[in-house]
Length: 170
Image 1 (tube, rainbow, N blue to C red):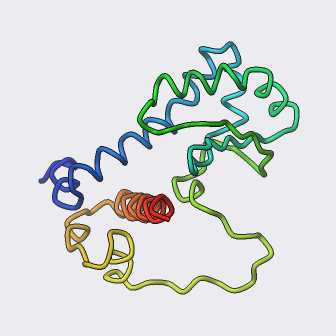
Image 2: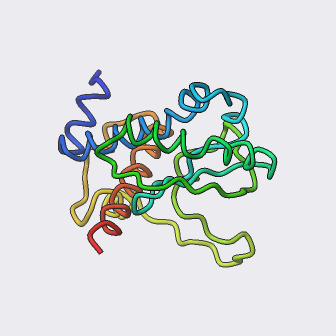
Image 3: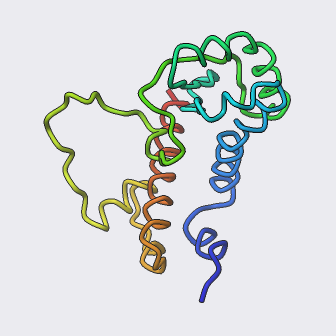
């Protein structure tokens, strides 16, 4: 049985993996940074939603938690800048969202469409999904991953990073 690291190495180049790891670390640091600033309870009611053009978007589930985070906004921003200097974080934006429950997935971090949309997205074939997740060339490495949840998470991660790279190039 192959190790996950071997599979990932076969699927992505090292630069791509380093960038993905850095984003993952950023999103995972929210609880630690809020605790460091004396507002640990806020982590259960908020989450990092995205990093877009240097602006770290943080979503809260109630206006009260948004206000609490605003009182520490400068300190939080400075901590993120210190911890992630290469990410170019220039601002912290707080927004009210529907829910920040722990069961949200990586796909929730991508741009979400309005709820009232009635047209469903077309389902992609396995090869098409692999192509869009990585670029123009289909990657057969996903076929070697038996855990469907892990496979979908990798595909979603690839799509999010690709989309973010396209935005950065504009």
